View (cartoon, rainbow, N blue to C red):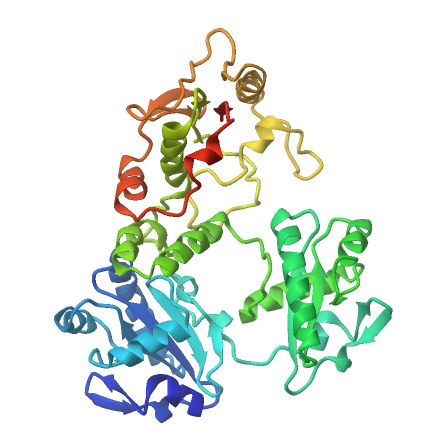
Length: 459
């Protein structure tokens, strides 16, 4: 209770006056901390959706409350916006507390709905916005029941010198990290040595109440064994595949935070990179410019998923073009939908082509993907390969007689090849987003012109 009162103060504001924060605390109670603002279009779309679910859940008797933390620019905007909300709020005049809450919850974009345990003050979910779907059922992912770790990973796990009893690192005051990873996954291989160094530093500093258990997604035991050699912690035995599946399901159901890769869709990496950029700049005007593009939620009224990475690269292409010495830059966009998405079935909110979807046309991926006879468009693949191999040999992408001429990028036309069923040379890809990256946002620390010296051509 003390932790929660320290966060919100003794009182928050309700529709009919002040409400004691201590009354929001207790066993099984949950508090949603809603960071939002009226100027933000996705916030204005999400708020009525959340309000409807909130009233449904309250009528059903769920011990749940929401506290609004405003990012509005002025008191008048706050007052107008709060009229649409049926829950509590931190007073707008208490700017110090609003800023403290944003810092405590590390809010990097809005809308953000964080879920806090009303008994301990523990953060159950840093951003539960996507848990608020179309169903009226109260989200199961906000479960506060403790996870039985022995049921998840078994009585014994694998150590460097043999089996280790799970009871030796579980119990009161102990912290366990479950690390889902695989050697075939490039982000995993990049993250593992970083985590290993941190783990060893923590252990040297006396963090004996902390342990990590590796839960493998490797395809075979040999890969698992090779990968585990790089790790200083424990592991679930590879042959316990049934427990691994159960563990994954339970982790997702209980919204346990696992730091590592978790079949993360490309949008999440995109959000991380863009939000970190905004966070470092600490400029609200930047967030407002990016807001319509990057904060997308999975309810039916918001269906447009607008990717910024390629337009961002386009802005970079312009700088490369300006500093290049005698070389050509060729830009392309893949629009052809893949019959078998490279990263597996996409979530329902995802629209369009996913990262890596073009690889089935370029490479033999039968060992890592199950493809039907008609999944590969042979003619499409041959054209792509012709462009790529021609570029590698000559510096000019050419797919043979009758193919679409692929013109290099230039400042005036911004040419790009649209790789769809009917390939076409187009120009000026997403000009509004291109303008945002090129002209409206402050310059990032891109490498200087000297970084491009010696480059001939770029695809």
